[in-house]
Image 1 (tube, one colour):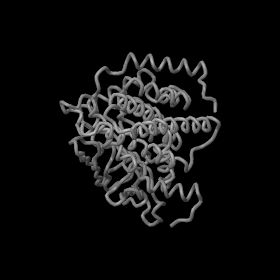
Image 2: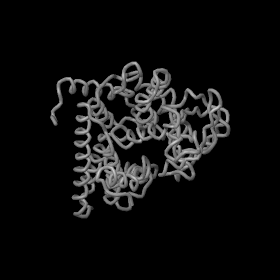
Image 3: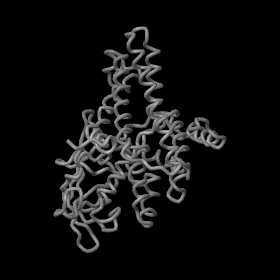
Image 4: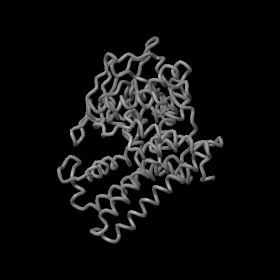
Length: 386
C-alpha cells in the first residue's frame, strides 16, 4: 500500500479544508436530539450539499461529488479537523443511500438519493422491535399486500433519529408462513403517513435520541419496497455491512478523539498515575492502526474487492476503542470527569462524560459485539455453531 498522497489528492484536501474553514459554524450547534438542534443540523446539511460536500463518494447526479473512497477518507479527516457538526442524517447518507444504490430501481435512486444528500428528507432506522433486538429476524411487524399498497401493522422501537425524522426504513414480514429469515421485505415508510404514530423516547438527559413507531393499518405503496419481495434479509444485511464497515465510523473520528486524549493527558500529566501514559499511547496507536486498516480496505475496494464478514472485526474494534479512549479520559480527569458540560466547573471537560456515555452504546448498536463474535467464529474462523 502506497502511503503517500498524490498531487490530485493533496489538491482535494486543500479544497476541502478551505471550504470547511470558511463554512463550519463558529459556535457549536445545539444537540440534534432536540427539535431546535435537529433543524440547525438539517440547515448545516443543506449548506454541505450546496457546497458539493454532503456525500463526496456519491455520483454527481445523486447529490454527490463523484469522489473515490480514498478522497472520502481525506474529506473525513478534514471534517473532523475543522470541528464540523455531527451528521444528523447519518442513517440516510451512510446506510440507506448506499443500499439504494445497490438494490434500488432507477426511479427509486432518482426519487430518494438527492433528497437524502441534501437532508431535505432525514431518515430513521426501524429494525428493532420489543421482541427483536439483536435477533432481527425475529421481527413480527407485518406488511400485507393489497393491490399496489402494503398495509403495515406492528411496532418498531429504538428508532435512531426517529423523533424528528421524515422517513423510516425497516423490515416487515410479508410471508409469515416461512422460516424467520425468509418472508421479510425491506420497505421505506413515510413517518407522516396515516396510521403511523411516533412517540419519542427520552434519554437520561431528557433529549429524544430515539423513538418508538406504531403502525396501525398504515398504507405504503408497493413501489416503496427496496429489493425483491421476501428478500429483505439480503438487503438488510447489505445495510448492516455498511453500518459495520467503512462509512458509519470513519477513522478520522477516532483519530480526532485520540489527539484530544493526548492533549488532555499533557495538560494533566502532573497529577496522573504513571500507568495512564501507557494507556494514552495504546489508545493513540489503536486509532492509527484502525486508520491504516481502513486505508488497506479502501485500497482493496478500489481494486475491485468486496467487504465481507470481516466487517464484524471492524465493528468490534472501533466500538471497543471508543469506550477505551473515553474511559482513559475519565481516569485522567478523576472526579472532574463526572461533570456535565453545562456545569460551571467543567471548564471544557464535560464533553468527555457525554462522549463516554455515548460510547457505551457502540458495542450494542449495529449488531451487538456478542453477535459479531459469533459471526467471526463461524464465517471467518470456520468454527462450528454452538
